[in-house]
Amino acid sequence: MAKQDKPDIEETEPIAERLDATFQAEAPGSDVTAEQLAADDDDPTSWLQYNKGYKQRGYSPAARITPENADELTSEFTLTLGGAQQTPIVVPSGEGEDPVMYVPEGQNVTALNARTGDVYWTHKHELVYEPNIVRNQRGLTVWQDKIIYTASDLRLIALNRYTGEELWRTHAVSERQKELMEPSTERLTNSGAPLVYDGVILKGQSGEGGNWSAFMAFDAETGEKLWDYNVIPPEYWIDETWRFGDGAPWTTPSVDPQSGTVFFTTGNPSPQINGVVRPGPNKHSDSLVAVDIETGEEKWTHQFTAHDWWDYDAYLSHVFDMEIDGETRRVVGAKDKTGWTYVVDAETGRLLRRSEPHGQQGAQLPMFALPPASEEEAKEQAPTAMGATDWHPSGYSPETGLYYVDSNDDFWAPYYNPDWEFRPDSLDHSVGGTKAFPIPSEYAERATRVSAIDPDSGEVVWTQSYEAAPFQFAGGNTPTGGNVVFSGASTGTFRVMNAETGEILHEREWNSMRTAPITWDVPSENKQYVAATGGSSEGTVLEVFSVEAEMTEETETPAETETATEEPTEAATETDAATDTATATDAEETTSTEGPGFGAAAGAAGVAGAAAAAKKRSDSDDESDEE
Image (cartoon, rainbow, N blue to C red; front, side, top):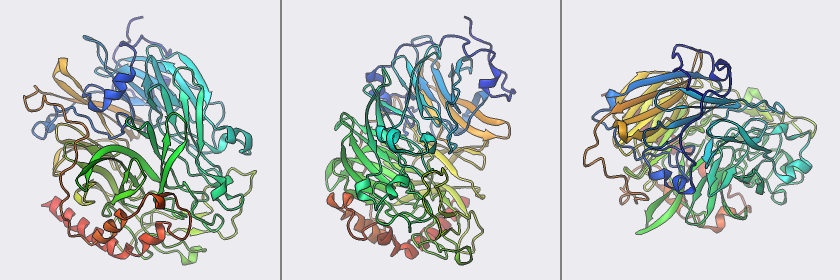
């Protein structure tokens, strides 16, 4: 079958509805091997998994786009898609063949020519049931001849990557969920992209419906479940509160191939804004969890915010090497809604570093002040339940040694319902109070920006602001070997920035953007491509840009992997004491559930000073940006 003509870029009908048939042409290429997936971190021509590679660093060594030519970025093609917040992947093809892009579109998947936009096929999935919680399908992955993704009804699906034909599907729930969850698994859904490691699919679930969540492993060839890990352990929760505990592992995990460990983060406990009905630390919520890939056995856990009243989910996990006390060690970087980023020892779970705040912490009420029991007593508080940072993919560059994070200042006035009680027959168990936000604030102004953080010292090295508005965010960030960072914001701006300084190299008014751009190099064309997805009034837009440039002798050298960061710089900030305190945490403390050591109470003491320091730094950075 001949390939279809290039789609009209003015057409606004979603691809899944526009095609007369799901199959237009067979996609080119060959099966993707375990070796190719392992090399994805260091391959400038591919983007095979969500946030690129096992280690999920969101970094590409593609180096053709540089600070010197970033303003030459030109559009190749534009398509309007179904769904929202999706991140494509790109699989290189053989010599003389164009790379293939795979894009999730709500419950569907489309394969297209990554250079021209020609559509090969679209697979349409009809939901078995409508989940109580609506979530976006943010990504997918590839293994051999398969594209693998999860739909909102928790069907894990494998498609033939050449034709879009469905090969197998399975209902991705744990055995305990099948046996005990009432009224049904409609309490659960999916939003995060799965990750494949050595033929094993690793994925979690999204929750907030009065449930408990699970993380699972499946055989990529057959879809057979290998093991499941139920996030909420009943023995560590009071009475029956574990039944609505939530703690969903809803973002994509990362893997350390050296130790065979998968790292995933978890979300808030339920109900969100009411901790009265779930006493104790609510173990494994808002945590980083390390599990053995082969057996599913827990290695360690580290909880960032215990007994959470504020919906302060933990997000993402990035594996890299860092020099600690003169020794190179494997570490895991993570972030959460509080406005801190963290560095945790990959072997023990010990907290090694906590950064300066990169977002507003506290207003009329300190960040960790408990919400009042009535609307009349509600006061301004920051961050909101949307967080000083959200799920948007972050990037770590081994070139600069910096971590690039979305940062947002906003305010809310939460309060809880003292009469709330758990009802097993109800699907509405997510809040237990009211999330009144965003609200105007007299304490500080709203801000939306990108922050570059040194994970070694914890210093916020630079920030770059976007226009700020209610419910608006900086999106994901993608650093590259060309010393640039691709970024966007939901206010409708797409940028290329200098990775070392934050200088804006290229900027255009675009679409509302919350995902991270992806990028890949095509040596035969002397081109580096960038793909971004964003929302518009007509749907979700996919646009592919490129820069054509000859590689110089300097840029032909690929980035060294696992480069340790430079010696820490002494940063005289008002949060050094908090950072130093965090380094004293030992491995035993990461799994303790005794005493108040919840992290929340410990952090509250320094909130006022930290918030003032964050505001002062933000003000001076904004002035510097304007200059």
